[in-house]
Amino acid sequence: MEQPENQQPSLAFMWTFLQIRIVIWRIDYCRQDLDRGWCSKMKPLCFLGRTDIILEKHWKSVIHRSICDYFFEAQKKAAYPEDVPPVISTPHHYLISVYHNHLYLLAVTVSETPPLMVIEFLHRVIATFAEYFEEFTDNAVKENCVMVFELLDEMLDNGFPLATELNVLQELIKPPNFLRTIANQVMGRTNVSEVLPTGQLSNIPWRRADVKYTNNEAYFDVVEEIDAIIDRQGATVFSEIQGYIDCCCKLSGMPDLTMSLINPRLLDDVSFHPCVRFKRWENERVLSFVPPDGNFRLLSYHIGSQNMVAIPVYVRHNISFKPGTAGRIELTVGPKQSMGKVLEDVIVEMTMPKSVQNCMLISSTGKCSFDPTTKLLQWNIGKIELGKPPTLKGTISVSGTANVEAPPITVYFKINQLAVSGLKVNRLDLYGEKYKPFKGVKYITKAGRFQVRT
Image (cartoon, rainbow, N blue to C red; front, side, top):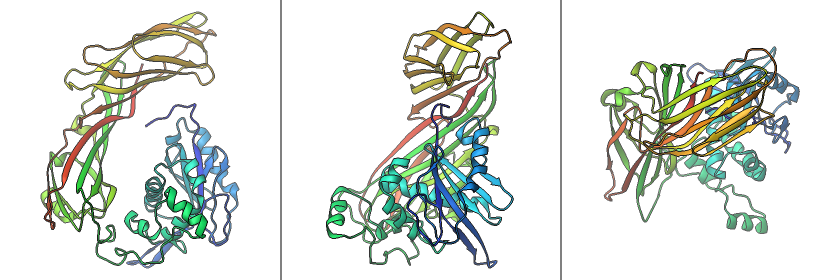
């Protein structure tokens, strides 16, 4: 999802070398292909606060921080934080980055390396930190820097990915809590376990053994993000869905789950958690898996525009600029009647041209604000009830004499209990255990990159 321009992202640097500095985090990443017998090394990876590196860890020879200047140049040219190229080639290195929650993770390789391999590892790092620290932010990394080093030592062994499954890591390094932190400080201990995880050498490394719960429950969130471009007449130029199914399984023993879906053949480019039995999905379009304990992403998928993605919201607009005098804006936003669902957390944003000096606007619902520095016009609507579309009207002060083009409109929204693609969970069966778990499914549709041209 696009972020407002006035929110500057941080870049976190992780570099892996033999010497250790507690200033920035840098990772030497190396993968060995057992079939072909080749190995490719990734030298650094980074977190920065705007231009300041937060944390650094060295495992081998040091690469100077000036290598990051190539990334900063690309960042300046990008209109949005997500638009920075994920792979940047330099004369002697390759920079591979991931953006998440106003943070960049930047990895640097000294030789040509499969980028998707590095990107997947970076996403594993993000997911692990988010689970350990409840959120993945620069403050969380700073406040838990000791545990960050402990986790990286387990996830990478001499530069090779070793333990990336969350259940294995949680047995190796206990997640932080208040009492454990106090006890460790008093006793001089760390969170690192001296016992080998029970699942490390098993056929199911993602699930620890001897899991017991008083209440057995399994909850699933089907989340779909709509990326769309709507032209001036309201016709859809481009649309697609990026979806995923997140799970929270708290089940005793070693349960074997089977999930069947309604319209499973809608899904394209499906990416599964390792627990899913891929052959059964290929043959029967059924999800069969032994789930990890706790939270995990079961699968992510893509639905292309050839499937005619339904657009759940409309934006009617009338925007005119008159250089040297005043322009006018009229906006109306509402849900399409065919959906029959309530829009929530609705925000409309426009980045005005530099010649716009001020906006005098009145909204029927919500709050409207204009930042004269960033030129960002934001209309925070909130919830839109059926039959009550909110409106925004007013004038714009425009300086200069040159003609000004109307900017595109970016819309953010959320719809509960709706999967816009029509994908639904049909049933969930449990095998291998005698208890009956509590089961629940929640559907959410929200805007990804949703833009209306004016």
